[in-house]
Image 1 (tube, rainbow, N blue to C red):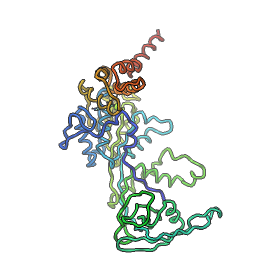
Image 2: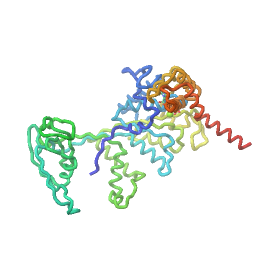
Image 3: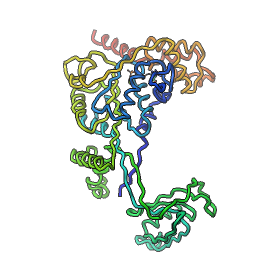
Image 4: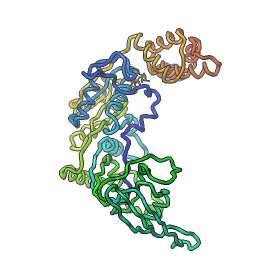
Length: 453
Ligand SMILES: Nc1ncnc2c1ncn2[C@@H]1O[C@H](COP(=O)(O)OP(=O)(O)OP(=O)(O)O)[C@@H](O)[C@H]1O
Ligand SMILES: [Mg+2]
């Protein structure tokens, strides 16, 4: 029986992105207008308000099949706004982030990478009614015996257990598998447990309120269940289409074979598996046992994708089970990768046709100032006024992304020098040592020219 895990939303990948860890949402008022500063975001109000509408439509499931493009110069908060969207969507709606560069993998086809990302961004909420035994353990007797595998080892063979609710009490005899779980989980009298009647899976819920005996585990106290000991219980799981694909594929792909021969987990999922999953999900929806939650697939730096990937994307958007696609680019009219054609954002026409564009604007010096202060708080460094001024200049002249990176390194330098606060000199010295992207590229170009001469 494959265990079904609940997924805690799609946020886990985002935790890694320290650069945006100060963002907690979009900073909107209840009427959807943007606060000057809110949830860690400063200015860029139009884009944030537009993003708020995207969130609203995502929640209502009204945007699937469309694509939103965040377009603006480098360091104007495109990724920041997308992170804000993810935070607003909350745990229940999947949010998956990939970079346009991630489609180029040595092992997998571009279309496979994209398909998987899309399927991770679609949640399926399933309701399942199961028969369970549930109650406070009032008697427990685990019988030990020699293990069938090794006569010198004693393992639980069976158990007798009495479960009690407010209304009823029932005695059960359980076999070795359940007995083993009772022993492993340290179930004791006074615990509230639940046993799946079909699979025998044991879950320990906690200590019964007012239970006698001494509890060393410090587990949480739960009320003693009411009603019958054997009852129907509704369970709600949220999974993604990709979770289901993986489950079906591992069952089909000969789990036994891989057990014996150590076959690696499948890199590519058979289209047949996906078709079977889709069919099953549709049935669940029709039977009202399941509900589809279209999430958001965010493709950052989408200009790194080539014609093949982009065309696939726009074709895939015509399907039934598709997430909302949010993309970001800092390119204007540019070549479509893999062709000689130029087009707005480097995108083919069929994709452009589906786009809703949100633009981001350059920040004012005051806004840059505020963002730098927020980042400093997030990194737990203090800034002298001179340092703020120097960082603001870097932000305006080069890019905000560069300024925030320098801030972080300048913090390290200040700490190494035993200083409480970052000084202007820290910033200048660090900025001199570390080039921004444009500077680095120009540097290399200069060398190339010299070599050609
Ligand atoms: N409005 C804002 N409020 C607070 N922080 C911001 C804001 N805009 C950007 N930042 C922060 O500034 C840094 C640079 O912004 P970000 O990476 O979002 O820019 P971008 O538009 O995605 O740039 P690029 O085109 O280079 O990818 C990040 O650390 C980001 O979190
Ligand atoms: Mg970005």
